[in-house]
Amino acid sequence: MLTELSIAGALRGLRARQFSATELAQAHIDAVGSLNARLNAYLTVTADQALRAAAKADQALGRGEDKPLGGIPLAIKDLFCTDGVRTTAGSRMLDGFVPPYESTVTQRLLDDGAVFLGKTNLDEFAMGSSNMSSAFGPVENPWQHAGKAVKLVPGGSSGGSAAAVAAQMALGAVGTDTGGSIRQPASFCGIVGIKPTYGRCSRWGVVAFASSLDQPGPMARSVEDCAILLRSMAGFDAKDSTSADRPVPDYAQACKRDLRGLRVGIPAEYHAPGVPPEVEALWAEGIAWLRDAGCEIVDVSLPHSRYGLPAYYIVAPAECSSNLARYDGVRFGTRVPADSLDAMYEASRSAGFGAEVKRRILIGTYVLSAGYYDAYYARAQKVRSLILRDFTEVFQKVDVLLTPTAPSAAFAQGEKMNDPVSMYLNDIFTVPASLAGVPALSVPAGLDSNGLPLGLQLIGRPFDEETLFAAAAALERAAEFVQAPSVRAGMAA
Ligand code: GLN
Image (cartoon, rainbow, N blue to C red; front, top):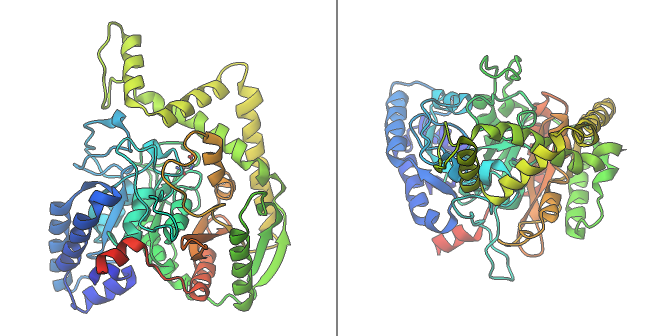
């Protein structure tokens, strides 16, 4: 089936004219048609636009033009502004918003010949780890628990993107990661996802959550596919003042690197209490695989990473409370008329935002308020500096770090909903790299006893995504992970 291909394989097939971009797009549109009603991974399907783009890709291929992503069907997290296509950020607040411009990252993908299938579901304004906070209903993970008939979450916030890729409703997807939103759903859905170094991909045209942490990145079914996508997405953008002006390497080449002599750090603090033995066991297996590939394994310490979660849940809400102040009923989406301007603001924001977003705005406003700023926000920023310093010191001794991605496999829809802190604990392994701005990747490494995927995380030096791809490719080869979510098995039967 064309939907089973890797991006690298699809590019070869398209160039060899074994099938057309139109056939490839149609196969994906059909898959979306048969699976989306159940999974709710896409909020908007742009089938006509996809077929037009595919026809153009076919013409270009016919002329012998060789674009890096010519004819590759992708899913886009609905946090990216897409010219002329409804953009929701998973919120009612943006009702009716059709951006008149294209985000830099999606424009780069289009320029490289990609075909967009549609916009994928997410936690409202990317705040969450389960997709349960989307105003458009939850996403179902295409994987199923072997023993229990429950619907599982795909993780979040880029859960729609992860589910779409895992269920073969796209060859790859674009997500964003503020505290784990690419890596954790990638782990829950058995795919690969990378949060690049902060500044590697432009944030221009991405609906802002926490600007000092937000970072776009690719999600796909193989390490090489993520490498191919990142090369197109990354690069300097004058429209984003935090965008890094550095050359973009050929990441796919890096996947082939020999790992002999690479120093891999194992941070003691990631042996967190309460982490299931299966996660620990998989981590140990990952360590053995890298040792077998010729790496030197080094025990290291990141003493301040234990404060990562509390620091993140101050910094991220603080920035969100400021970024989301713009949704006041005047300029965007939802407006609830009222007697006075203040009452209109209040009524519009009450109606437009969901519970999790309101909680974060309240926390953020509190920690930034006079009297509490020093006690919370300023202190969290100091902790953040210490976390970064830990990474800087550790990367003098090792080249890359290996940890689990998440403390569990996918959980059931509705679980952890009454206890925000247990939901936030999902991010325990992912937020330190976000606070430090360093790149981190999740690669599927095995299944737990319930048949659900578990990922391993690699964390690297700033702008050294290449080492992450090299080490991830080695783990991928050793793990021999088979992407077989039950929803696909059901289709084939
Ligand atoms: N789960 C984290 C949160 O809720 C991370 C979200 C993200 O990375 N966008 O904030």
